[in-house]
Amino acid sequence: MSYPGVVDKGIVTNCNPSDITACNAKMIEELQKGDHNSKR
Image (cartoon, rainbow, N blue to C red; front, side, top):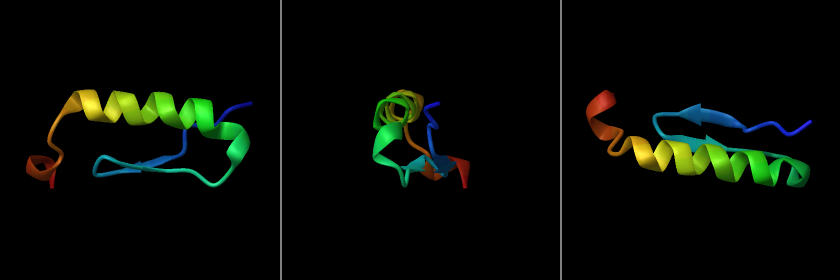
């Protein structure tokens, strides 16, 4: 099972190499949301 990681203010973190595909998808999703600075 792939785990997309943890998202905090647009920063995506991940610890397991087996989860890279899910993590990349989550990073793309967060980038599409735009600027996260205004959401603080």
